[in-house]
Length: 150
Image (cartoon, rainbow, N blue to C red; front, side, top):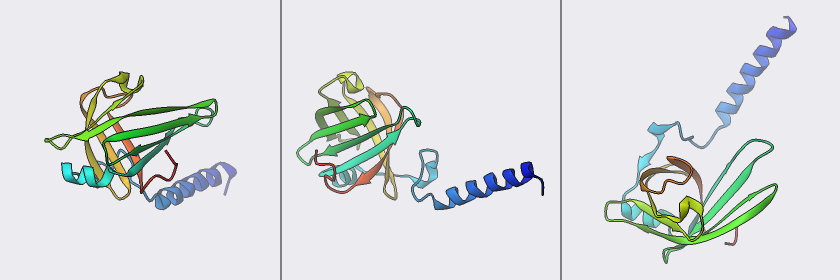
């Protein structure tokens, strides 16, 4: 077998292995997500944390946010060049939307509301109204409690 064909086969097999090992749904796996009711959003988020990461090798970042049961929230984002903290408030509206307002410039400091859905330990937040921040959909890994000490 020539080296080019062998290389292509190896890349294909590596892709299959990685895909087979993926245990959490991605934002594109829309059918895997189930919408949460307002009470499910409160129960799921209250007292727990959300984690996400992004960027590329040179500009990677991580985010963790704690949503306290009293309706306050704290978050930290960090990258190779530094970190930033923020606090704010969150609530669940009568029409089952999660809404948050940061006390800094995140989300332009304006209230933003999202419909929340869940797939395994992944939560998706789809923008409905107000400030969307940087995206129309955010996906987070659910973390019980406050493992980052916010």
